[in-house]
Image (cartoon, rainbow, N blue to C red; front, top):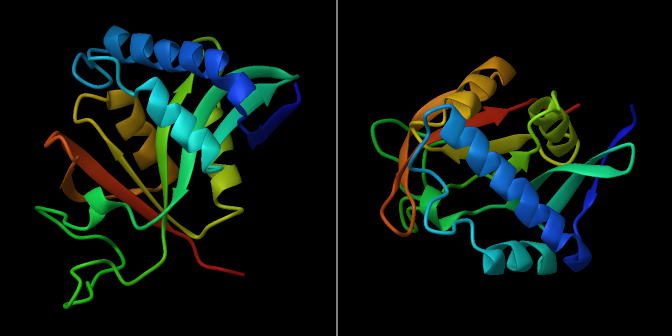
Amino acid sequence: MNRTIRLAFKDDLPRMLELIECGRQKMRATGNLEQWTNGNPRRELLIQDIERGNSYIVEDDGMAVATFAFIKGPDVTYHRIYEGQWLDEPMDEQSKAPTSDYWVVHRMASVFEVHGIFKSVLDYCFTKATNIRIDTHRQNVIMRCALEKYGFHYCGIIYLLDGAERLAYQLRVSEG
């Protein structure tokens, strides 16, 4: 099998929506009934990710099997963290914004029958960045286990713009 990761294009949108639905079904099958509800993540957000060059496709032998967004911070929902702190604290006291550079992985989804996507995505992302943050729903046991297995540290709780709680994780790797 030949696995590659590439930028997504607008022509990929129908397949991306299918992959997001696969991710949603996986969540439901494992008891995560609250994440990605009410049409989220929305088509418009996926289009925005594509237009900004933040959306990616994972292909196995030319077949799109996963999608994810990889976005340079800062992420507004990560400015405040509760019941913990980011690994790269302290914060800049004037702006209350983190002082270090980081990237964020969002909206990762894949088909059911493919394995090793999480590792492939993060291995790729760590070729581009040394400091990555990810948040997930408390009920997303699959993602939480994958994050811990890959070495991410649980940092605390963040809140999305709509007020939804998410568990926040971070991994920093040394350069060179």
